[in-house]
Image 1 (tube, rainbow, N blue to C red):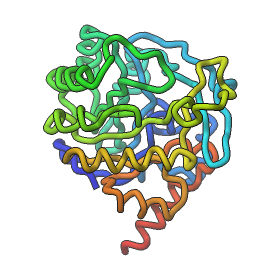
Image 2 (cartoon, rainbow, N blue to C red; image 1 turned 45 degrees about the vertical axis):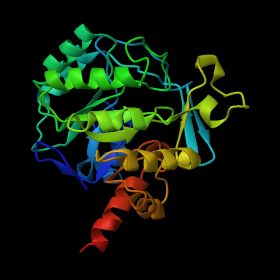
Image 3 (cartoon, one colour; image 1 turned 90 degrees about the vertical axis):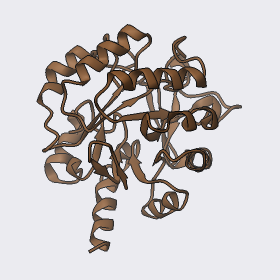
Image 4 (cartoon, one colour; image 1 turned 60 degrees about the vertical axis):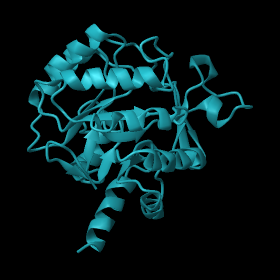
Length: 284
C-alpha cells in the first residue's frame, strides 16, 4: 500500500486513460460500470493525460490493435485541454466521494505554472506528470534525466497535491529517482514503444508512429524495470502489466507497493474489479 502526504492510501490503481478523463469510464464502459462489472470506487483512478491546449492526437478507432495478451495503441495525447477538463470535470471532483489523480504533460515553464494553478483548485488525491509518453515526439523540455529531475522539482514547488511520476522502461531510473526523493511520492510505468518491444518487426500502426505496447506481453521488459526502480530509491512504485490474478503476488514479490490495471480493461474489463474483490474477500 502507498500512503501519500495528504493521508490518502491506495493499493489498486486504474492506469492513465483506462477509465477516461474522469475515472468513471469511457462511454462504451458505462454499461459495465452501471452493472458493477467495473467498479471505479475500488480504485484510485488516474485520468487520461491532459495538456494545456487541445491536442488532436489519433482517433481511437484506427490506432488500437489487439495482440496476444496485450494491446498496441497510438492514441497519443488526444484531449481537449486543461481548461475544458476543469470546466467539465475538475471543478466537480470531491475527494470524499472519488479518488482521482490527474495526469498531465507540459512543454515549458509557463504551461507548467498554468497547469499547477488550475490543478490546485481541484480536489484531487494527486497529480501524475507524464513527460515521455511513447506515443509522442520527445519535447526539448524533457530531453534527459536531468531535465526530468529539474522539471519535477519545479512543478512540485507550484503544486499543492502529491506528485506522481510516470516513467518509461528506457529511462535511467538510477539517475532520476534518488534525486526525487521527497519530491515524488509514487512512480508509475508507461507502455513500451513498439521499437523497444519488437526492434526487428514493423508495427501494424507504423503509419501513425508505431505505437506502444502494453499488457502481459510486456512483462519480460516491464517487470525487470519495476525491480530496478524499487531497488534504486525509497519512492514507492506502482506495478503495471498485471494480467492474471497470480500476477498480483508476483509484482509484490518484486517490491511493488500498488498495482495498476490499464489495457486489461480493453480485453478483459471484468478482471480488475474481480481481482480486487477476490483479494479483499481473502483478507477477511
